[in-house]
Image (cartoon, rainbow, N blue to C red; front, side, top):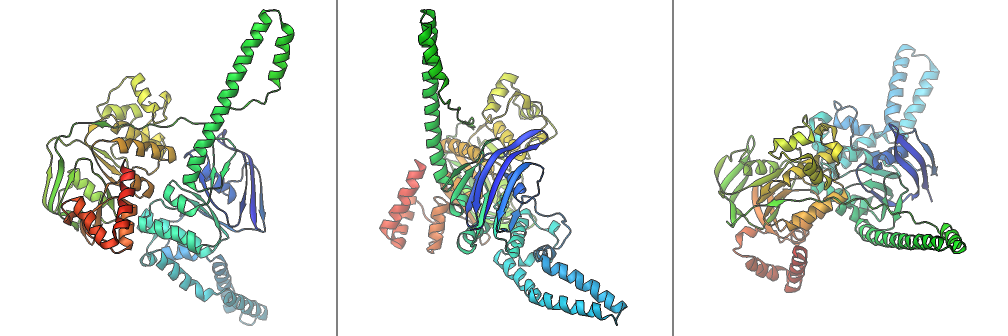
Length: 570
């Protein structure tokens, strides 16, 4: 079987150890996720496998020459290039042959009687036909159609959005047909429909293996059967399960390791005290004997269990049940985007806004924040409404100011001690207080904004892609805190794991109208696949909706959905 045997003794960057004592085997059909924090070197490891990084102590064996292809987080060197020309680069042999043919044609014009040039040209034409050059346009069209980018082929890369660029980069890789894929955050910037398409493609159509780096836990569960945990400057830990099973097994393993370590430390402390007592009582021979026995013990290294992050949000009173009321409103940017006939936003709801990119979800949020006026219609706001807004672009922060200055800018002028204590929950330390925000990475800036929002009283949280940039522990800490939040949450997210855990209601923007649906994304998909896509706002009470569901999908299946829903909410 074809495989990669990887051994990285040491990789350093700016005299800082990034990867150390990494050793693992990858078979041609392995489906692996590499997980852990953002800064431990996951991307560096993929770049080592593709020789983008070569300055390290290493030994990599590629048995039977597996061809690898790498989807990076930054895809394109030349953004002025047309999309179709970018995709054409997947056919390297065809491009090189075309160049050679152009050179030979010029020579033939100059030396029409040179038989050697004519013979070489005819041989190259025969080779050109053998590599199916006339098929590559059809292949580009077919893959572009699969990924819904056919209408982008004549545009420049700079003219298309980030989620469209992700699709173009994926299309280029699929056209190259490598033996093994290396995918670095493939679901970033693409909408849910595209994520699910890629998921199904990898599960059902792609026949070979891949390594995936992703923070989309649902995506990893459905596409990967092995999980490799990359710890800071430590060997890789391997788990032959998907992400959810890995989390459970890791927790069990940590508990056992910590218990064994504590038990041994307790035994060693006890022995040392006895040795000291025996020496004091002039029983040196007993002390010496016990000390020798102690020296022979294999010392258990303290397991690496990093500090867990902790989010917090302050609640303010919200005695009024209705926070917002919408009546016959057109949401618009430069032109009308969608219509809201009538709906309300009430206490205790946790609402997820669903559907494709560019449909107007962010514009709806700006309208709710009173930053954009609706084209027509009326929004009633409760008098004591207090909104805390998290923007995926971190617009609330001044990146030219320090972390401390951004707290002061938000009317949070705390002492150094209090500020350090707050930020320690987000894994910052005292040295970070006087760094400018732009010096931090994207995921650290996200944490700074959450730390500031957590200090403000609010009864309504508005979150635009809150899990973007956050790694696994931070996502799970955020979910835990949001489940405890007493009042109302409205959020945009492409993280299905997060959505299914948090959402109680869905606002669906479809056919240029906003509709309401109860429950979470899995249940919405279940009903949609069974042609049960009806507007929940037509029902006065949830009991009426439940009765209708039972009529349509039988009592047993309706009961299954309800039990699943209530279990999650509890």
